[in-house]
Amino acid sequence: MERVIVTGGAGFIGSAICKYLQSNAEVFVIDNLSFGSRQFIEIDDTHFFNEDILNYQALKKVVEQVKPQVVIHLAAIHFIPYCNAHPFEAAQVNIQGTINVLEAIKPFAKQVLFASTAAVYPIAEGALAETGLTGPMDIYGLSKLAGEHLCQGFYAQTGINTIVARFFNAFGPNETNPHLIPEIQNQILQGHRTISLGNLEPKRDFIHTYDMAVAVSCMLQKLTTGIHTINLGSGVEYAVTEIVDAFSRQLGEEIKINIDPNRIRKVERMHLLADVTKLKALGWQHTVSIDAGIKTLLQN
Ligand SMILES: NC(=O)c1ccc[n+]([C@@H]2O[C@H](COP(=O)([O-])OP(=O)(O)OC[C@H]3O[C@@H](n4cnc5c(N)ncnc54)[C@H](O)[C@@H]3O)[C@@H](O)[C@H]2O)c1
Image (cartoon, rainbow, N blue to C red; front, top):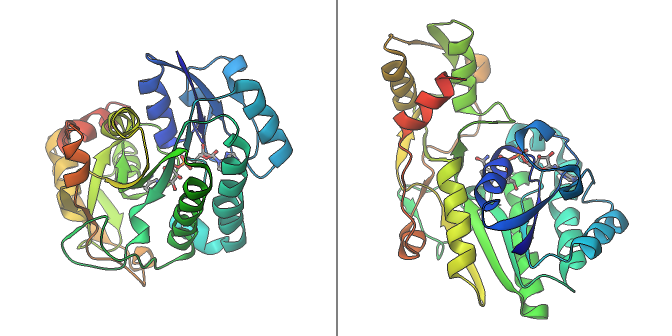
């Protein structure tokens, strides 16, 4: 079985990826549990390393012990409001941490997948293709774009197969940050039927973490040489009101919205939609609909 290291594997998306890969690979996780949780993953202590990717010596030791063939680098500071409030920490973990991971794995890895983000794209209408311009709006997007460039340098220097996956908006179980869907979920599970939200018009490409995990596995299997940049979204965008409607349908109850001025973001993208032509060409398919995914969130 292939040995796979997942940095940030105890996080929201990481836990779904580990679960999916475990049937076909020996999965090891490096996570400092700053945002993730040990309970999210069914991995024994010999396969779990509670380490900070900023500690290069500790990271190198783990990598030398595991000798991974594949590395999926997810560990990052991700929630945009948190990144804006902690720009030094976000830049350090997302840039210095990525340098550390890439340096440490050089002697062993034959394939690396880096979790980039839709936030590297500028504000735009319509579906965003990988060939389009980049233009991040915040420190988070900027730090991830720097990570993409580090991956390009890594590939140029080593020739190790590199995949830059631009993740769009994930939803599913084990959410670690107060994004839109868990915010609605929490208010509903607390019994509210009038929920407080900010901007209602923005549309986002939501993709369930199970579909993301399948897509990551598909990319690792199909893109085995060279360097690739590829969008990982569903290819469908939903307005905030459509998400609330989906909760309402699954609950079988009306949900009203109260616009809370304190929740309205000053800078907001109205659209964020992935062109998933490249991903679909690998044979991947979008399987978990918004309604099916939300149904499981209400059963929590
Ligand atoms: N959630 C989304 O919608 C989304 C969208 C685009 C990109 N991404 C990217 O996908 C990846 C996973 O995101 P997520 O939503 O699962 O976030 P998350 O915060 O749940 O996962 C990140 C994990 O990294 C760990 N981590 C953070 N700093 C670390 C450090 N210094 N050393 C070791 N571990 C550290 C955290 O404990 C956490 O488990 C991130 O790189 C994120 O930027 C996520």
